[in-house]
Length: 473
Image (cartoon, rainbow, N blue to C red; front, side, top):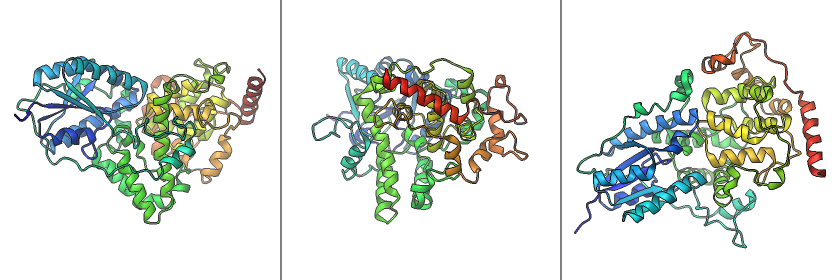
């Protein structure tokens, strides 16, 4: 007899229909499909900006599912319990999902799979969040890559497969299970008065993600190698936001990049390298999960970083260090939920080196403020900047935020866009920062722009002296 029992497809960071391996596998059975999203403790633990953005993604994906005559069931609670309840209510005999690779999600999913299988349920996980499964990319000696460039050379010409087409229709169950109201979850609550401003900067959903990719390939990719380093220019793809929530797959981005490369857009190779840099972060998190919580290089464990909240770290978070590149980048992140990649390097170097502050403080603040927050990329980026991670920036390399801004934004467009103080005609973007921040910060656009909390040269000298002590200890 034909199996007509429903399949629960558990969506997490894969909120799309196209190139969805788990969904395609479920649909190919011809059985009823019940799409589910669970607000479990890992979702509740997200930062304010990421949680707001997730809510928008879920809402948009719910609409997308309706276009294939389906719907998204929302439930909250511990994932194994929620899934068992849904199985009991719907008669589902299978649960499919896309794999995640950071330690917290791996631990959860391993427990879920074990619990379901013990109950006689068919539980299957599928690829989809990465180009290459972490255990499939190995060095000549069989280990994993700890340096990026050799990994890039290895995977550059590997086949990643053709992206899958979206299903035209998903077979519905005879009776839909009850669902929570997304509004009742109030995922934007943590952003308080800044929620509406932040939401305005989000580019949400599968359709918008593909439009963004198409526009990038058409208009920006030709000069990407240069323009991607210019914070005052709109030269990046912006796709990190959509990749975070799986509104587009890395495989779809990869094929678009290769197509552009074959069409003569040589800068597409830089874009492809960036996709593999994301992979590198996930592979490291899979093989060395401590990268998310501890120094990847144990030699840094005794370095005397500041680990508490000080006046300097508060100024850094609030974008009033008196260093324009740092402050502009921090304000851009607070308003838009993203930060230019060059800015990320500068603010991370400044915090960990000029202010000698532990990278975990920066990592946690980024987790609170970024809509494109990604546990693996965030951790690797911070450890790269601090010098404590794999393939890291040499610890003695200390970016000068003044000369960096002059080099990459010589017309001062970036600082002017994001810093209102001292500007006779401040931009709307710079003013929106003051509409978002907590009133208790006591900041006004009419304030005097602050003097540097640490002289750039003095901060560099202090860092180098600390590193010399480390080397001789």
